[in-house]
Length: 94
Image (cartoon, rainbow, N blue to C red; front, side):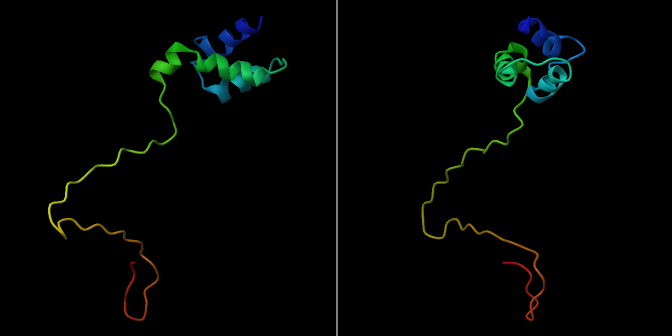
């Protein structure tokens, strides 16, 4: 019975393969069973279509680029912060 409800709440054309929270909300407003959240999350994690076509909303760090340096002062890196309130000497950035 739970699998049928999960199929309806997630796979049905009107459900649109919603994410974990949307699927859980769709179920909670109608039914409840013990460990329902765990079942929903596991079901969606195993959904082939979601794994193939849904993107991850968490930002991913891009890999660091290695630079070869042949001599001193070949490359200089700096971090700039600001603008800040203007100082007496008309400076706004660090």
